[in-house]
Image 1: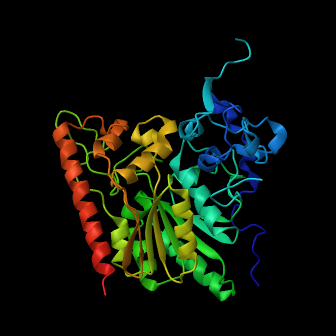
Image 2: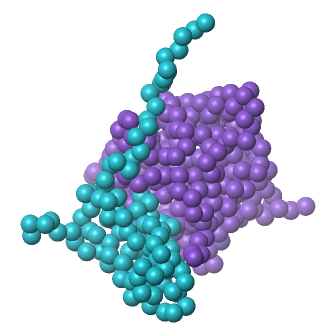
Image 3: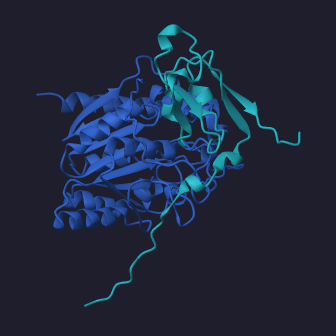
Length: 104
Length: 299
């Protein structure tokens, strides 16, 4: 009988969500909900993924036909500010705003 | 309610340590969306070996086994056969390696695994150099590119050899499924992986995943550049099912290669004549691919 240690190889168990990468950001993506057509292209291309779904009535819809669709929101704890969402947005509803420290 | 074109489940957690606008993380996200939870990954030394973060952090919701640089093919063969012996034949076993670990260092293990015919996926995410160690030239670096080991200078010592086509090498192994995909076409990527899932035997998929750090462009252009690679025919998207070619995206009016090259700092030094030479090479490759598609679909 061979006695193996309980964990023969090191196993990584801590989820990376502990690592808040939002501090890497230079530019902050800000969604303009008056323009957003809820196409979810930003969600599709986010490399983090830091774009989450929210309830349809979290923000007013630009058109009544869009009111039944879920809205998107950015999780600033993890967004690194790469700007892919702003570049891919078909209606240019995402602006990249320079981050400012609290003292400024 | 939401209308999505790709599966909603996420198997990758945020908080990983990839660079801003990393193409390889987008590639992994789509691959796991297509394969689902019943998957085991094996990753050699490459960018993805550092993306999950420092031990004990993990970023994927599926098991991941790190291996040495040259043994991805051998490692996934072993995992596959062990799982088969345990009667777990429905688990997807995936090797996820960079272009250095596939085109150069891991080629013999991959070739061996393909020849033995294990029921595995081998996914090569192609960022066209050894990005993790500091942008050194690999066999998959395209013609004319700057890297830190082809630095240019007065004698213009850039990489002038054409890019090694690993997909064609795998076609020559007569494996049942070979495909090229890129992150700008996620629906195409996921459809191809789902199709491959139905096929038994070794499957090879090459994903072009742009790297803002190594290709020298601003991180917000990742998806735009990978889309341009297809629209200029620099990186055609096709699949080879049991030897039959099918081009999945055929640009109606291919854009000039200059549009793709001028967005990237690694091609900044190219003169108009050199761009003309690259354009000629791209046109030739495209014609060759069209011929292959035509002659394998006859009869």
